[in-house]
Length: 325
Image (cartoon, rainbow, N blue to C red; front, side, top):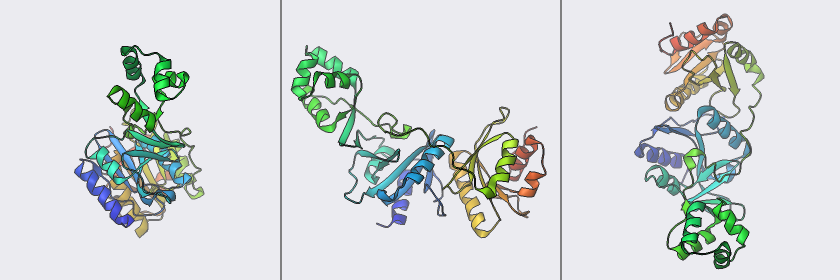
């Protein structure tokens, strides 16, 4: 299956599952392909045939964007170099959850989260340690008795009951022994924080030197600007003004070429799904106020405004939003 067809299939599946799905980010550089929202759940998806193509820089960018936009970064793929991705299993690449399309369909369409995750050494599950301790005590078994039955140490059983995860073999053995499951679902839409092994969110990359004056003016206006490296937009800016609605803003910057117009349209689509506004700062004055929902503001206009509130009002006005009194 081609990657384009795979993206189309994932888009259709998300639509069937009740998600609002953005346009495909068919422009480079791009760290993700789609944004999708259902209620409070926002997902940034990268779709790949072979997940070995997912590199550390892209993983870091997706994790940063997830932090800025309160979204879950997620990769849907078919295989690695060595094997197909197994169904009902969550993998991890550079701190980002990875699953195959069937697992994604179970999660999003059927509401059935995966129970198994892959980590160095094999496949594992989350154990409900409290339930395990209760069932052991109900049988009158000591830690040592259960350890003997499982073929592990007494200390290991104690760790299971304290919340340590277990291999799938141990989980199956426990289920057969007590005639009930002890595994808990992997909370993929919360980033699978309880099982993934990842460092803190990577620091922001440096701004492109060509964008530094825009970053400076926005910072002066009261925005915290997070430059991006591989997104369809140059930065995510958070409005620090507590009087505002504090909606994050996707920003672009370049001459207003045909490519820039395409980028602005993608930003508008992403803005609708991620519940952000978007603005494109152009190097020359445009005759248009906006491209769909993306405001167009020239760099000269931006530089000529000293009042931070006036900058906010101009962006809202160009986007067709009401300005604050």
